[in-house]
Length: 199
Image (cartoon, rainbow, N blue to C red; front, side):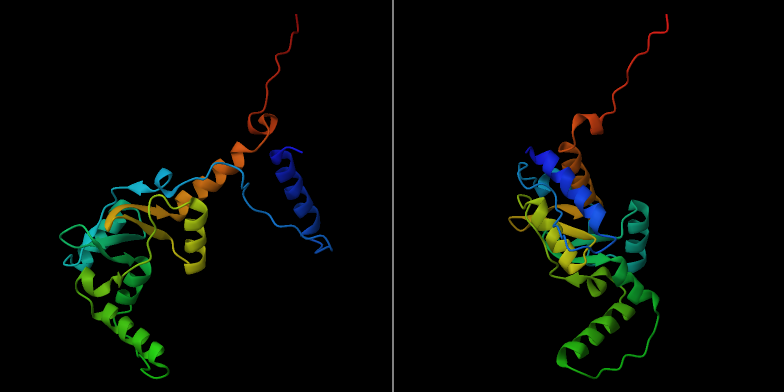
């Protein structure tokens, strides 16, 4: 049976069983026999970056102007040193909060980091240091798994220690759509139009 047909039948089976939680259970994923898609094909290359010395207010203006929720932070040599996201800025906007400073060592460290973000004046004080990264030759499947597990909206792409791009959730969605569309029968992908002869 052709792979595309098998995939569509799997979706049909899922639709017929998921609501009733029937005995039949299926695993649904993107087709695995397609040529491997790489991060380099979907990432945004040469992304806008921030400096550790950038004032917080300027960073917020930059992010709003770019229409993005976060940006990588680099040093003077272009090396990735951190990432600033909307969640980091939310700490700043609290303007003040009562931190318990008790619990495990991990809890106390988290409270201290929150305090640093609240009083931060520069991007270097607010950023999340040593962010997770992937290389440009990483498969989209692997990158998407990392983003899902770590709940990341944007993932820096680094080759040989240098920032070369950023992969976003939107990029992952484009990959999913293009992969699914490639396996749809032509009759479903592009509806045919029949000419009528009324002469």
